[in-house]
Amino acid sequence: MKLPGQDAIARRADERVETYRVKLPKKIVEHPLRQVAKRVTLALSLLVLTALIVYADHDGYNDSSDGSVDLLDAFYYATVSLSTTGYGDITPVSDAARITNILVITPMRVLFLIILVGTTLEVLTERTREEWRLTRWRSTLRDHTVVIGFGTKGRSAIETVCATGLRKDQVVVVDPSSKVIEAAVADGYAGVTGDATRSEVLKRAEVHRARKIIIATQRDDTAVLVTLTARQLNRGAKIVAAVREEENAPLLKQSGADAVITSASAAGRLLGLSVLSPAAGMVLEDLIHQGTGLDIVERPVIKAEVGKNPRQTDDLVVSVIRGHRVLGYDDTDVGTLQLTDRLITIVRVTPSAQITPDARRLPQG
Image 1 (cartoon, one colour):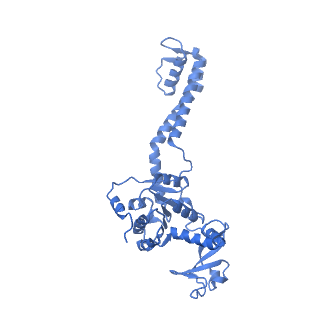
Image 2 (cartoon, one colour):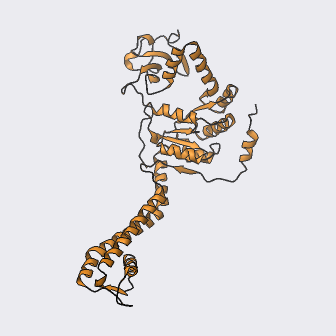
Image 3 (cartoon, helix red, strand yellow):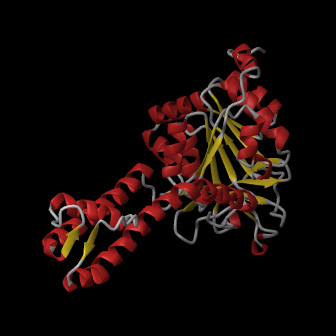
């Protein structure tokens, strides 16, 4: 089957190589121009204050050109003094003026230099600091979750996973839109701007070290290419992909996806169920909305449950996972629970009931 848009995607391989950027979330986000504007304002304020102090005691200063110091001379003296230029044409001659220079002008000169040098150093070292953060981030990132596509589907998917306890520093978002990545970074996720069908983009997201990959692209053909690329880079990760058309689901599975969700048909089934029974639709919506009300979770069998029937456990068991088989709670093949089984259960959400997969915290950059 030839998916729409495959020719266009093939042509992209011949395009020029783009520059892909990794963005890490910051605790305090402030525009660089705003930071510079604040420092310039503070420096100008010091300059004006110094000039007013000098002009207030202008009789204690001597100008070698005409002997008197007016307001313009005061600003000139403040400028050359704070910048440590010091031509020497205007000098303090009275004791009061000299004491003012020692106790007031000199500390203001030091503060003025700190502001200027601090701004310069911040501009010069910002790139180095960011590169250091990226290097440290890459060296510590392990068993994380990569979300490809941060639209409605991708955002809802990662919010659902994070509701079970997954930390935001364990999530990397990949999207071709820089504005989308900025929104993801503002939410606390790391972001990579670029086309996820390119292996170099996925490598920047450390896909080869990821444990879970969520593919929520806008197009089915893109999802197929991303799945193929991601599976090639990481053979052991769990890949879940979303498609619009149900006929493309088998192609996603052949490409390496462990689970494929058909978004259009899933929404349609929920609509149909809600028409037949609004209450049943509300319950199902509650189950898939993690973190509130009833949650459907997967957990291992504990030793106390070994040898029991699924109905004899404290939780409401829906299915039993045995090997690669998913058996219903009433399936005769289940028999009694084994220690290697896993259970799909329905629980009411409490702080102690939340199951936290991959809860190891990664160091902050």
